[in-house]
Length: 188
Image (cartoon, rainbow, N blue to C red; front, side, top):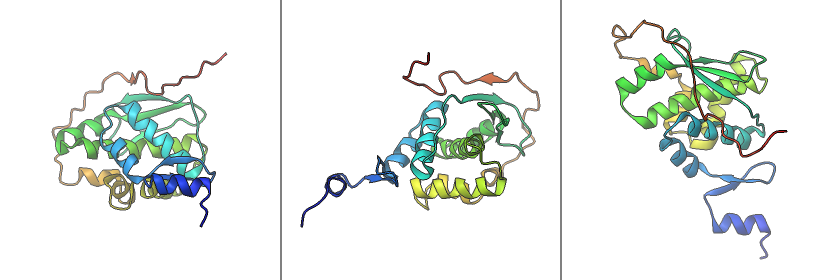
């Protein structure tokens, strides 16, 4: 039996998969390892962009991330018509302090950024975005990975059982995340 190029590559490296456009992309284990070991917002962001491109075939560059102390009911938001995502710094800090598990914190940040990135790509329906967040997370990380579980339930499930009386209500200045989206392209 003669194998074509794609079948040969897939048989040699089973962890690499081919998306609908015939492009090689990472498999579940690589996406899991990247997210579980991410050390910055920029690293999580690159995973968000890669998983969306793999799953949905869409990509948008030039995004900026801001951290702000928002009400806990709001995880993040994307002002329509901008290239900005504003992430709830207070929510992330509460989860970091309470759960003390970088893997879970990264999965939370992934879900929040993914949700807003889908809005930035022009998908404005909350119902559709929530469904797509779960679909992308499940496809790229597997059904049982913490990112897929958070996407299926809700990021606020992480706050269950956490006492929120100690939450600092003092509002700090919004900050921009430097080197959030690195690019090797020079724009003229």
